[in-house]
Image 1 (tube, rainbow, N blue to C red):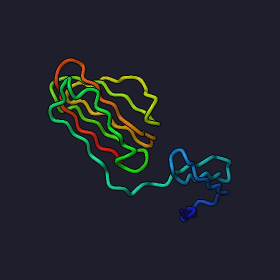
Image 2: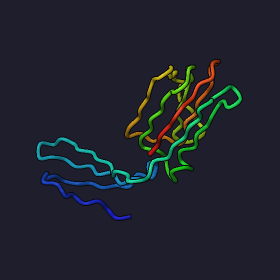
Image 3: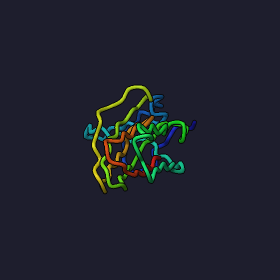
Amino acid sequence: MPIPTNKGPLKARHNFGYVEAIKKWVAQSFTSSGAAVISVEKTTDTPEFFEDTSFGVGDSPAILDLNTALGRNANNVIVLNDGPGDFTYSISNDGTNWGDEITLKRREVAEYQDISIDSFRITHTGVDSAYRVEAI
């Protein structure tokens, strides 16, 4: 994997490192005033889509393995509730440990950017619903 180079006009000291946890090169630089500037390599992958137009209790919990679908953890995720009922979701950055359950109500959208998500779990809460998830 090539090391990124500075192509911008900013004169700064640079430090590059590969962060294994997110599988990305990270550039850390300092301006002449001492301010730190951090940037992460952008991905150009094709997004993966997950959808269930009739999410019922028998489908719950739906565990979306974003890491397997993308070949790495997702950096950006959008989840939409298209159905009549609410559902909860939680996020895992390692596929084993899950964060808090978050309620997504009818017609709500949640978006995560610049985050590392291995898996996404959607749980039925009593009324059938529908969801769409896009991950990149």
